[in-house]
Length: 319
Image 1 (cartoon, rainbow, N blue to C red):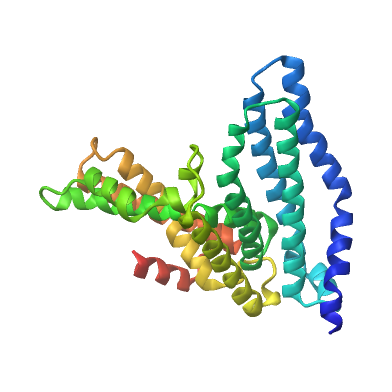
Image 2: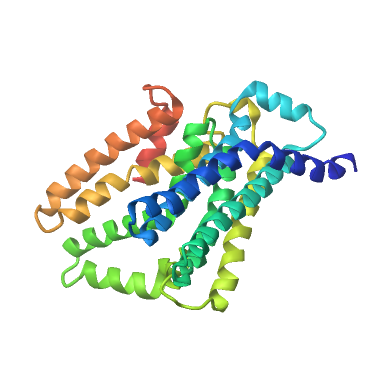
């Protein structure tokens, strides 16, 4: 009961603690979206979009800073000593970041109103709000999964771009099949796959930017995505081992990231040069790039240039 009663006081305290950060963010947003375009007599809409990019960066940094206690043994011990569970502390951070994000969005709206711009520019909010909501949750999830703040930032970007990475790997597979199966067209299959099966325009809500009204798919998909990430958060909070602070906490996730990430470079190479190199050359070069990428990624994750036997086994099996 004591832990439940501490939620609102802690939330209020953390929000008050952000007053300096909020003041700095206010200055940055208004300087970019109001003062600079007024002085330069420049395109106000361009600076509004630039302010939105700044908003993303501010929210991203703020989320990582709030969860950085997970990557420091002394800070983690301190938070463990509080009459609040680790999961509740992370929930409080998420709510605090959400409040901070709403405040920054309000600043963007005020900039649009003050400059009497076309309100159609706010159509981007239909994509912006889902993106920011996902980033807040993914930053917390990545902080739990990783062992340091730098890695948490990289993992947040990786997790957010995961559907795009999967698409890239799929295109890589299609490009290989094109050279093996007679009459097989990678371009045709890619177009069909993207337009009919793997609808990234729904998943990233980009289809709603061009004046398309919010529909049932939007109202269903957004909570499903956020609930799914929240369930992952809950699961990994319970399984997190604090003695692994400083490293990626879960080996399964570490190898998943390493294997998938090491395919990005060879896949990009193979797709871009598909019409200029032979199939044999592409396979050889892609394999070499995959091995090199995997080694660099594992060395970075494990903070050692000596690759463990289990890492080698995972790479061989996955390839």
